[in-house]
Length: 164
Image (cartoon, rainbow, N blue to C red):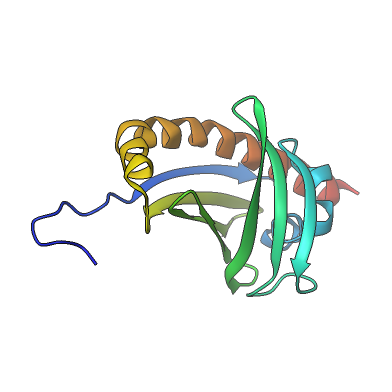
């Protein structure tokens, strides 16, 4: 419950896109291959399935990745799927609900792959609110660099599959 007169928590987003020399199906195959994610995306160290098979709404996993020089592990869940055009993954961490939406759009013989990463404060402690207010924008800016690296890795894997 938000108190009257209290400022609303700011949702922060960052977006990045790149063209991939592969079909949307090839890109989708890489995006949704949780079992090989650590092979396809350099920042991902390990994926441990927690619930579900394949890739569908409700599939959950624990993902360990190297971010900002350190390893961090978060629980992730598929929140939306519109194969092969878009998927959304959600994760609640330290009072922030993060979503990562990937979109695949056909562009001639290629695919434009777009990622939109958003953070929405939820029930936060005072110190989490303070950190979000002070460091949130900087964290999202740094996250953009990581997202671009992920897009490059996804593109490389999809293009390699297309060449095979």
